[in-house]
Image 1 (cartoon, one colour):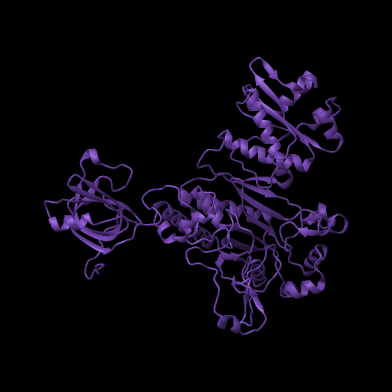
Image 2: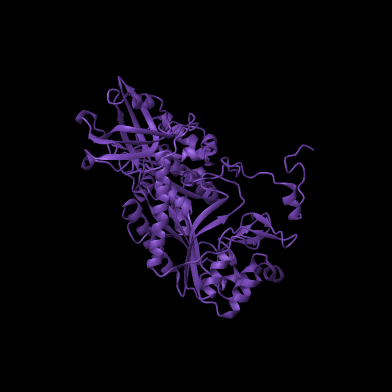
Length: 599
């Protein structure tokens, strides 16, 4: 039977003891991390969330105690009382904070035994993620996973401390809301008291935070829970958290500066790292031209160099045909690859084909001069001009690709990222933030033959582009901004529309009729008629931020109980079928096949 402790009290944690405690009697409680039987002595590493302490059992001092220690196995929950002793110098463990001492056991209480863990705790060996998620309560015992939860906690605290110090009010917005079009499918919740009607779980607090600005709150923030029914991947979950903030009587610069300082505060407080301010800014056009992405990874260079103008009128048919068809020609410098063999150059060409590019031309900058097959088609002066524009140096390999702009941009972007990894250009533990500004306000949906909002329908155009809404809306720029961390879109925001007339104009351009707008957003449009202040904000992906700070690609690693890629909670088995009585109360009938019942 497990032992029930009545009067025994823990005096210290397993990560607390050091040489200052030598000679003191202590009581520790925790899990058996490892057990070692070494020629008549038994050692266990006792673990709690704060760390490990080595406990030693001597057979000569207490035979009964020693026999009890022999029964200990991994993950037993125990309490140990004993004296803190200095470890022999040759046995000091410098990898843990308690490594100079050990506890010589005088009492042992087995509080609860454990089955053999289905998820190894002490060893970080690879294990199928489905098993980890099924036994998540075991997976979370791993010190690495606990550190991820601690990192998340510290980050949340840093956010709240910063926002409070800058006059923001934390306001919780509703979880049961009305369904509105926001880009993904809603999770619907049937109402028992309003038969046939449904709530939706919020995809974001967008409408409520704008209403709070109309309410005069002026500075709102929230660690907001959001829900989106969409296809999952490593950085997506059906439910997620975002750092949501909104401000009144401000301009774009106010939000960028505030967010700069928020990010610097988080990294300083949580990781003890200084983020250089101000954060670098690029326009959307610049980002696409230089990196082929609106979320470029700035931890390494290898920017695109446009060389089309240097090749105008050239006789090389490959380049001439691309330029004549309105295409582009761009180059990337691959550092220290000038000495690549023919086989290695062929591999680069195959990689380019994999990413949709038709092929690569190369210029190797060798000590004896440039080496390239292009010398058969281009004058030496043109080749030298290309090298100079690319600022390539001896030892570099210059690769050149030509194609239609959209194909070239996408292919070179993926090629750049892959080569950055292969050439080990990304230093571990590096964090590079970037603002991307001046996005298009709309994009054209060719399939549905209509305009769609690039960000969302509540984003204001840049004031200088208002006239383009009448003449050429696809050229209008949004008063919007994205913040990017290490090539991942971390957050998105905008200056909002606060005029009913302008909001209705935008709705009309994206195909939402006045009747539809009134039905879906009438409450917001009405609110704009009661003195809505100018306002704007941003939403930052909290889970993504913590995952990147933890050095992992998957947000599942920083969530306590995440869903798998089929949106299932493997720990609890959700979603599950429910009782017919519950469905009857909600006036819902479920098709047999949909419920998984054989027809």
